Image: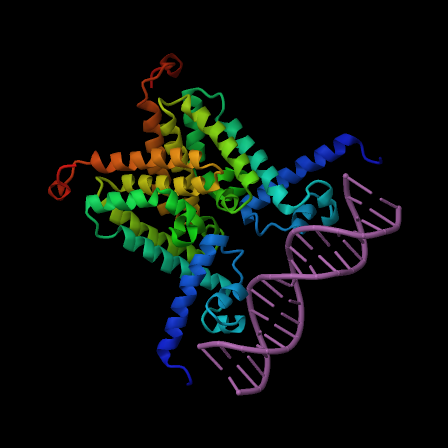
Length: 194
Length: 194
DNA sequence: GTCTATAGGTAGATAGAC
DNA sequence: GTCTATCTACCTATAGAC
């Protein structure tokens, strides 16, 4: 074998990173195998030694990308989470889909994908919901917060003017802040004086 | 001229209807001119006597589809609006994207489209927001409600199990109901005893 | 306004050399 | 594991007949 075993792993990791960014920027349907392989400095034939098909790539991207999202929400204090929410509902996030949350960009295409892909999506999103739940009183609140945030960023991107985007993002951010603050907290000590 | 002038209008209307349904079901990027024209019983060459390009079609679809959405929210009493929200956040809506709200299905593709298309999107969505505002105390509340509803339906479609979908939809529906009921209404008379 | 024919490009995927 | 070459299919768009 001419390549050490860790080489395949590292190439796969680069494919998931580049593939995720391209899919989030241009859409998964518009991301060609050719373009993806060129982005990592390889040619299209090599793609199929890592994934059996393009749809298998989507499944792997969903797992990888939502894993990154989970990391952003996991194990935070209330203050830290507030900062994450502010960053999520910012014009910077709206302006950079390639570096942003995959739920806002890939959900509609995952909805049209295989059951396997949707199972991975559901599993990862439930883990994110469980993380948010630790800052809230009920699971319901976490679902509401996720829906709000994802919807707001996606809609803001489809708008033309900065003014409309900002009023939308600001409205949802204020509501998310209120949802965190209004909770009768079990770990109120860690929050300090706001 | 072999065709009466109203024929062009009616063909255009059929193209917008079929094109909207196909774009919502399969994605606009995956909707080919060939397939669209076949769906209305014509051939691809005829497409360009109605639209100069495929992207011009998207702009027309956005205007047409969001117009339908506006109609669903316009001029309702509080009770009627509650029924609309229930139908929006239903598994039936999640299961039938082709007949559903275009904001949930086309926003990510509109985000990657021309400024003109995004201006149409923004203009129509603001009109929808203004309609919802008449049932709420502030504009902010309408933006929050729209973000929640759109995000919830989109995420529910990307999930695999009916159980997860239902708990998500139910959570957001309860919150939307609460937002309507908790408002100090100016036209409380029309709501009757709940 | 719609048709057929076709241009020129790119898509996903496979075969076999190295 | 990666490369080159290639297959088949489909894409958007145009030209010219009816």
